[in-house]
Length: 535
Image (cartoon, rainbow, N blue to C red; front, side, top):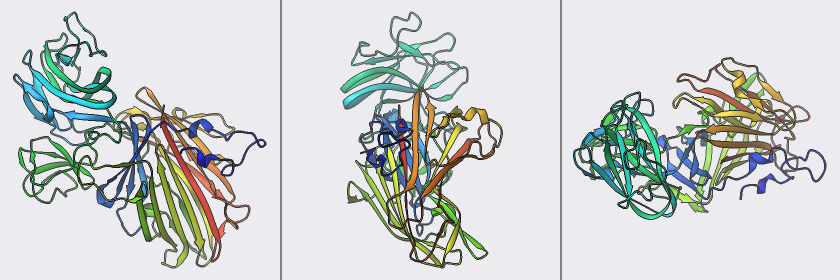
C-alpha cells in the first residue's frame, strides 16, 4: 500500500510529535490497481505501474551488461487504451490501404496500417468490448483535403455522445481537415460510459469546407488498463499470416510488417531499419505505435551513484552508468512468483507488486572489494521504493559525493513538442518555476537539510505529480545520518522549442556529521522512494 513507508520513523518531523510530513500531497497514491513486467531490448526490463485509473508509467530498466545490476534509466507516461487497428476492421466500399514510410514518432504520420477513402458512404466497422465502463476514440490522420467522418454505434447515433453535427449535416461527425497534410496521430473522443460489446461504424460523411472528401483512419480505441489485452501490440508468432503494416513486438522491440505473407521461424532480431525474420521483412522501432508516450524524464540512472577515493585514486560506482559494481545474484518476482517473460498476448505479466532484489559488490577501479551491497526494489501501483544495505569489506574509502536518490526530469519534450514538468517544490521553500531558467545553464541550486522534493507536470489537460524522498533506514552503526537536495534546473541551456529536450535533475545527497567514509566492518543503509500519480 502506498504511504505505509512514509511513517515518522522514516522521515524526521519538523515541529513536534503531531506535525505532518512535508509535501505530503506529493506522496498520495493515484488509484492505480496493477503493475506489469515485460522483456525489454538488450536483456532489459520494461516495468509498468499504474499511476491512476487508465494511466501508467513505463519504467525502462537497462541491462546492456548482464554482469551488472539493472539501471532505471527512463520514465514514460501514457493513457492506457485498448487499440483496434484497421486490420480488425471490416471495410465496405472503396478504400486504399496505407502504411507509414518512416519510423518513430517524428518520422511517421501513421504508425502501422491505415485506410483512406474519398468514396462517399464507404464504411469501416469494428466491434469493441470491455466489461468495465469505457470511452471510445477514433484515431485518424489530418488531410488538407480532409472530409467529414461520421460515426454510428449499434446502428444509430444515440450512443455517440461526444461529437455533434458540425455543419448542419443532419448527422453527428467530425472533420478531418488539417492545414498540414498527413498530420499524424490525431484523435477524437466520440462516446463515453459504454459497457459490454458495441459495433462502431465509421463512414465517409462527405466533403468538408475547408477541406475535401478524403478521410484517413488509423484505429479505434477504448479505455484500458494494464490488465486489458489490447494496450500493446501482440507478440510476434512464427509462421503467422501478416499483412503490410501489422505491428508486433519481439525481444523488447516493436516491428511493422513490410509486406503481406508468412513470418519466419525465429523472429526478427535487427535493432534498426528493415530486415527479415527469415521469411518476412520488418521495420523496427523502440516504442509501439500506441499508446502515445510522453517522456517524463531522460535516460539517466536514478537508484544511487557515488564516488569514493583511497590514496590518490577515485572510483565511481552505480550500475550500468558508472560501473564498478559486478552482479552477484538477481531475483525478479511478481506477486511472489519468479517472473518468466511472456511470449503470448501483449507480452505483459500483470500483478499487484513487483520485487527485484540484486546483490552486487562495490569495487575499487582495480577490482579490489569495497563493499557488499543488496538493492531491494518494491514496485507497487504508482510507487517505486529502493532499500539499499551495504557492508564494508575492503580498505577505507572516503566519499567525494554520494547520491542516495535522483530524479532526472524533462521540462520540454522535443520529440512531441510539448512542455512537461512545470515546478519543483521543497519543504519550507517557495515553489520554483522551471520556465524562469529557459535558455541558460544555471548554477546548481542547493537546499540544506532537505530529503524530500515534489515535482508537478502538465500533460495534455492533466497534472502529473511526482514525489521523491531519500534517507537513512534504521541500522545500528549506520554511517549515514544527514541529507540535502541540490538540483540543476537546465543542464544544457535548452528552451521550450525545437527537437532538443530541456533536461533537469534533482539529487538527494547523503552526508555524515563527520567525514563520510566506509571501511571493512562499517555499515550503511538507506532508501529512496518515488511516487507518481496522474491527477
